[in-house]
Image: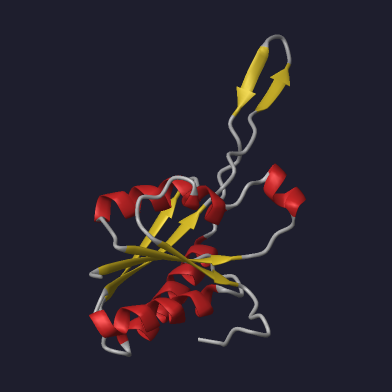
Length: 157
């Protein structure tokens, strides 16, 4: 196993996902790619009904402090990986997470994807779908799903 792709969303399960990837990578000295995909919903266009309909462009959202915070979190996760002697890179992308993760896995020819599960309810999955489920339905490499909570029979990484 040469390379592991680890999509992270900075939720409660993120640290557990990265630790699981490190645990699997260590014996093989696998390279870990930490990936964050920012999914921003396209803002609706506003139509002005004056003399003729005019499209008003949506306001541009400039959030440099959020971008900087994401970079810092990714850097901290990368430090966790490299502190145990593994190599790591980080990738930040924008767009639909499932599409971006699948494209990266295919382009980089990763051997494994390690991703977290959030245990959303059935209604959420019906309306929103899930990134993990979307990946599982189309991926070409093995996927390890790390649950958000530990069960009474399982241990902590």
